[in-house]
Image (tube, rainbow, N blue to C red; front, side, top):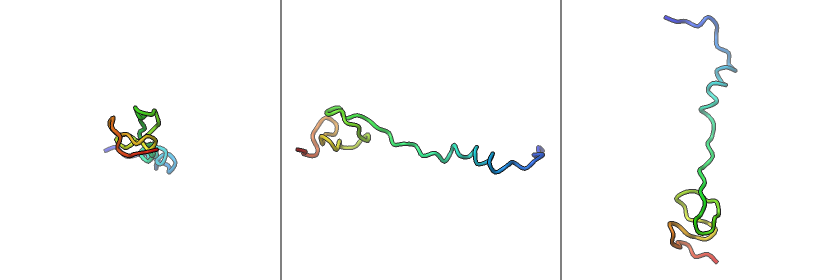
Length: 59
């Protein structure tokens, strides 16, 4: 059975595990009506459209 010769340092362990703790930024898409950046599968806050129809009336 393989046994490590030396104890693995704290820094090396944390550096290896740090890749799993990264927070991914939310996905972004553009509104086909007005071109604003919005979250996917959400109503556009600028023009109020979702899937080519007006859901929220904006002025």
